Image (cartoon, rainbow, N blue to C red):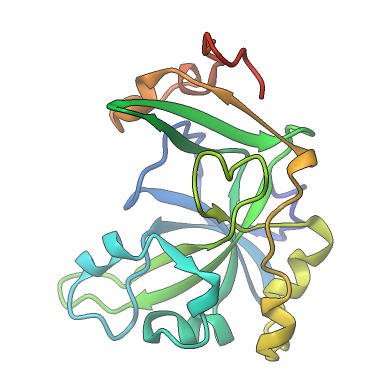
Length: 216
């Protein structure tokens, strides 16, 4: 990941995870002088929050609200980050049945979600650094399953998103588009991912959906 994202400093001993859930740590790239790869808790706790439970409600930030919602406004101006992943899950619902799907790039390389982060000063311990993932309207691959998708930034704009010298909100908002559907794949996976207790490579293995085949 350090090579893929041009990171100069790695601050954490980050381990692979195949079933990340809100409040878990995620791999994040920030630029504060050097470009650094760090761990942050997923679920934004704004600096003004009264307690950390706020984070469970702010795992995502709608791109349409970044300049108006108090939890996001300052972070959008000053604390943008890249949340590193190589896939994400969504669930297809048909009646009472839910089938988990894994979305990933055809290149099978890691990529960056557009993210924001903040630091909350805990009265009981060290500061809590947390992040949120920005969402936008879905592309044609995700649309049949969900009405939103995370913003995956093209490689060529990652440094622009991180640049603390860029303050024009219109320039930044213009980066937050659905990733091209023709550059992505999806396949059904095991319902192991329905429990956060399961975290192994088996979570991402293809599981055949009888009516769809493996890829669709």
